[in-house]
Amino acid sequence: MDGRATWDYNYFGRSQKCAAGNTKRASDSGEVDQGRNRIYFSSDQLTLQRNVSLLFSPFSIKEVTFKNRIAISPMCQYSGVDGFANDWHLVHLGSRAVGGAALIIQEATAVAPEGRISPGDLGIWKDEHIEKLQRIVSFIHQHGAVAGIQLAHAGRKASCHIPWEGGKQIKIEEGGWNTVAPSAIPFYESDRAPEA
Image (cartoon, rainbow, N blue to C red; front, side, top):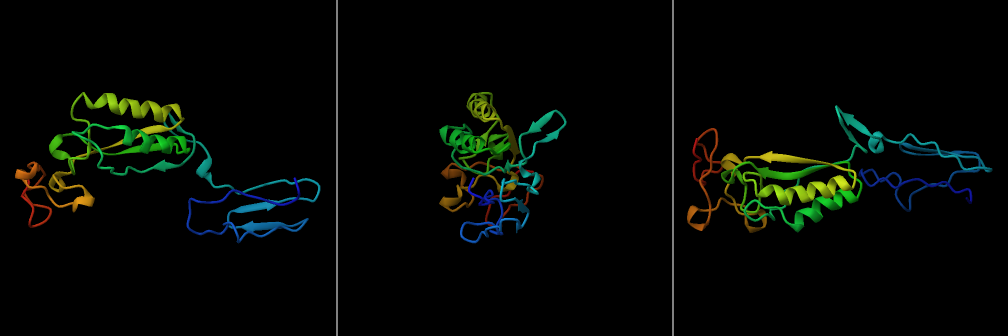
């Protein structure tokens, strides 16, 4: 090594304390402090000692061990058809596993067709949905990650257009469905009241 100290770039935070262009070079016998990263070295041998975040250390909950503490939150993709996952979901979720995340939680997945936010939501209300979901879960597991799912029922917020089509409630005559909720109060005054 040529005596220059280097460290990993922190892209998980917004502080940018250790970004390209604003790093400092340590003196031959000194210490550079860049936030949580401390680098110590001598001119003979470069020795790195870092106060590394626990982010990259394994974590266990009962019998499940995560390879690190990076979790991908569920993100609605509105790309399903009749509740079925497809290649979009495989690439979207699988790429997070390949990228190193330890836990990948699948988007809000409706437990009943009337519980979908939109016609593009994923579902788990019929056995036929399992095959496509199993393909995604297997891929996630092959890359050392744990798969999770967000079970969902949209209640009075169901039967809506996908966001880039306005997100408003779909009329029954346009392919919408009757919503079901704990009370007969619509989400917006202009929406149909749900069945309680």
